[in-house]
Length: 469
Ligand SMILES: Cc1cc2nc3c(=O)[nH]c(=O)nc-3n(C[C@H](O)[C@H](O)[C@H](O)COP(=O)(O)OP(=O)(O)OC[C@H]3O[C@@H](n4cnc5c(N)ncnc54)[C@H](O)[C@@H]3O)c2cc1C
Image (tube, rainbow, N blue to C red):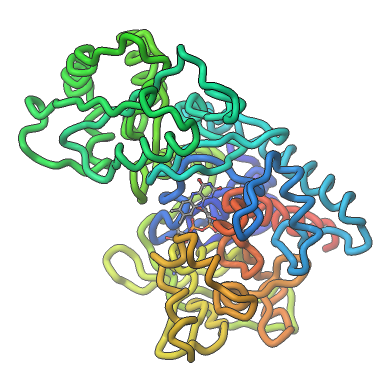
């Protein structure tokens, strides 16, 4: 049962990881919560897992979140994880505090997601090494169960040691499936293992059941959630010759809702360990995560308005509290509506989610119209293109003065309140996630971790604010 509403009304803008976590937490703390969201943002593109601090740019892999956080807090620029912490803390104390907050919150989140069919495995002690959609390796500390079985550190802990003869990995290529690249994945594995004969591609021809069509991952996953299609698909799976293989990697299309069940069925049929490998974004795994989070939010009593675009905010008044901010949004039928609240949380993501855009030569946050500088240089302009934002070369080529480092998101104060020209713009407006210029989500492999952390910190401030009134 949702809590009794005691603490006022919170309006959350954005339904990715940052928005949904802050909405769930606010609702569980007795606030009445309305969440308005246009789409699913970068969270739906994610490769399946919660990164805390897995790679400190430009290409320094780290073994554990603790090691990563230590490097982050010792760095010259301020990271989202550091906002809200007492400035007098030493770097060691900051690291311990961040780990403590994350540990409490992730411990709270894991069983809630698991109840919605999204089981996370992992720990804050050690990063896993998983494959990305193009065969690259990524460090993740919490991964969905179906991916965690593909942790290369568990398969072969010491890459320099001779490879165990019993180890043989098959990558399943499904003939009708689009956006999955077994050849790249094989090459990625060979870079890691360096034993050619032990990594093979196995083609599964199931066009008898799909026709000659090429099917996108989202449709495939939906089909596999239906009993009839799944039965026919499993008939084809049973024809795979799995003898001699220790592990089989399937594209991550094993259903949107029934993944764990399907994975078990395949394991029983083939008597071999199965793991999922992401397809190209937007990923099924990202959609599974959003669906699970939305269910948790609905059960916590959050009122979610799907498919609405917030277009503007007005009546900002810095001198009064609670301030009246009203936001205008477009409903599905393009009808303009207005909503007011006591507190507002802006969680609209970066250029990928829609939280940052350009108008002529200006980079702006479009709802509160926060200016993020001019795009004057063609090289800088390149960095706000969303495809560039997700490529690693973007980080390697960017200098300290480039757009992406300095102006890619909004500035906040120590309480996560957006600032413009060094002043907060309203005392009851907060911002979290990839919208912040201190987020560095892909660069430091900390996307979901920093979104969760900032969302939680906002709710802690709201609770304090209520006590103070
Ligand atoms: C390809 C890719 C893979 C990634 N993989 C991982 C990974 O495996 N692990 C990890 O930890 N991180 C990963 N990340 C990073 C991570 O996805 C992000 O850091 C995180 O999801 C950011 O969450 P967010 O809530 O701040 O923003 P988003 O998820 O982008 O959410 C923004 C939300 O705001 C909504 N919105 C925007 N404008 C409006 C508006 N005007 N009105 C209403 N709603 C609006 C959007 O529709 C969306 O719902 C990946 C990112 C990418 C791009």
